[in-house]
Image (cartoon, rainbow, N blue to C red; front, side, top):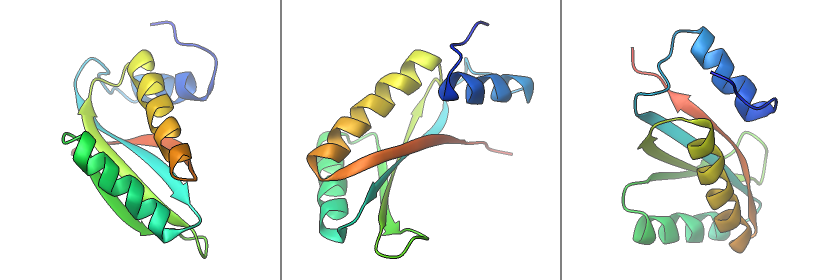
Length: 109
């Protein structure tokens, strides 16, 4: 499989090398960061109301005075799917004065 030479492509290539089948749906988590707790909670509430298939968690970040909004959904982690959802979450986060801080997968053992 040929993947673009960028951060997302590199992570997906590492997953393939580790034996992960990217054709199978898995839990993918997108991370949003905020300086204001109220903005983080407003985004979380918006996502809960408009994207019922997304599990949302709000919690303090390791960095003082920063809040995380973690958004988890089950999806096939193809390059296009990952990039599309990341752009969607970035756009939403900006509407609430935050920004997207990447993604990761949850691997079940």
